[in-house]
Amino acid sequence: MSGSPKIKTLQELQAVIEAARQAGRRVVQCHGVFDLLHPGHILHFQAARRHGDVLVVTVTPDSFVHKGPGRPVFNQRLRLETLAALEDVDYVALNEWPTAAETIRRLHPHVYVKGQDYANPADDVSGNIVEEEAAVREGGGTIVFTQEEAFSSSHLLNQFFSAYPEPTQAYLQALRQRYSSDQVLERLRELAPLRVLVVGEAILDQYCYCIPLGKSPKETIVATRFASEEQFAGGSLAIANHLAGFCGTVTLVTVLGGDPAQEAFVRSKLHPNVRLETVGAPARPTITKRRYLEPNFLTKMFEVQYLNDTPIPEEMEAAVAERLTRELSGHDLLLVADFGHGMMTDRLREFIASRDIFIALNTQSNSANLGFNPVTKYPRASFACVDEPEMHLAVGRRYGDLAGMAEEVRQRLRSSRVLVSRGRLGSVIVSEDAPPQETPALATKVVDRTGAGDALFSIAAPCVYRGFPSELVGFIGNCMGALAVEIVGNREPVSPTHLYKFMTSVLR
Image 1 (cartoon, rainbow, N blue to C red):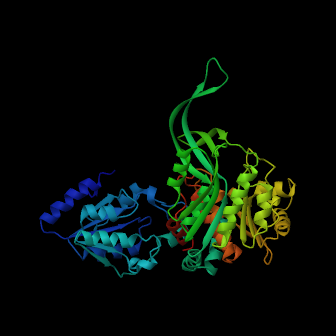
Image 2 (image 1 turned 60 degrees about the vertical axis):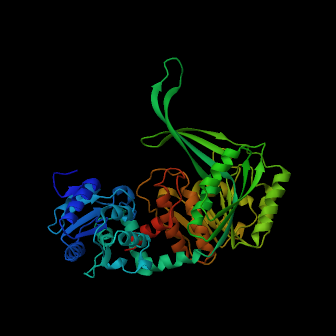
Image 3 (image 1 turned 30 degrees about the vertical axis):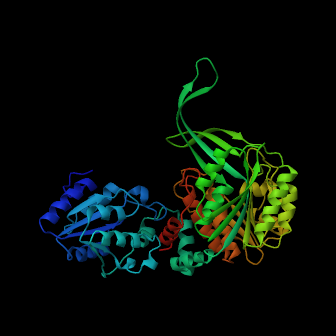
């Protein structure tokens, strides 16, 4: 990576440290991102060096940095080079894992040094310090927390290296005056005791990666070469997984086809605290959307859908209603994920609307139901979340004031709030007791938009149930969406740790 003799691979560093130990020298390890080196880091390294003879610094790779938009500002090569230039640092190495725990187990430092921000494990939003401290003690070492003057890389980067345009910076600056990151995290902890019931279509998202070869000489088609494929748990499955990271209990009621291998896959992909209640549909396929993509840029070429989108038969409809009746009393709120593929019939919509429970509603328009699945097919909802084109379809007008349309839908559904997501334009929330709240988009890197709306809905619904103010719902929801678009498909849910880090970073 560099001509500097201080920069080592982890394997090389292990050998160097072992030689130092054999020579009776005391090894000290520091670890972090070190995106913007500042005086606080210098003081930290000086204090760490006083605890031993050899100071090694391990650095989080770019791929594991989850500190907010545009981070890291400086790539891993530059961060290694900068640290290697410091007199107090003897060796620098790039870590290979998300946390330092495995590295500590391999290096066995005599002393592991962290800043004062980590002295109280409850203040560490990542929760990694507990695992790292255990790894230090396993190797016979000790952990030390420096007490030097602290600075914040995130605060400095937000001030001088922001990835956001000026209007978004102004929005965040105003938000920081009203909420600290600790206040937002404390509100999010209110979601932990919630018992959430989810009902809606399970969707298997298949990504088939193909290399375009060019036009076939004998046909008017573009030929591609198969590269690889993967399958994700999407639709209501993804919503349940997102919720499970923040809420204590999640129950999912859905319909699955008769393929036992598909059901086994679904169960294997659900978060441990998601309980699955299925209604079998042996004559219908589990909804599967197979997308063909160019792998380097994830460009979607075309899609094949395996589904029967006619309304489910009356016996299945009754079975879904029976499971909902059985589950409703044991849950605080109901999230409805209606993708318009036949599970949510008119009778079930009426049944759900008649229940005495907080109903969060997300209906989606897609290529299979365009124009036939508006949110207004439901008689009632406590909260509704749709995207901008879906709002136009719901009111039957192509143009007009978006907030005004959302207010029409809110009144028709008798909702407390309606959220309209607008992609790169952010979101708008209309409420019965407050003016419309606009929140800018907070994503700076878009890998894949699939599932981003589901992620936003998953976090916004329980926040509205808990009575969060609309500006906080918009902020948290757009942070969730910003992280979701960095994930390929529904390969994994947005983790609470990543969301907490993101919000903490942008609010500093």
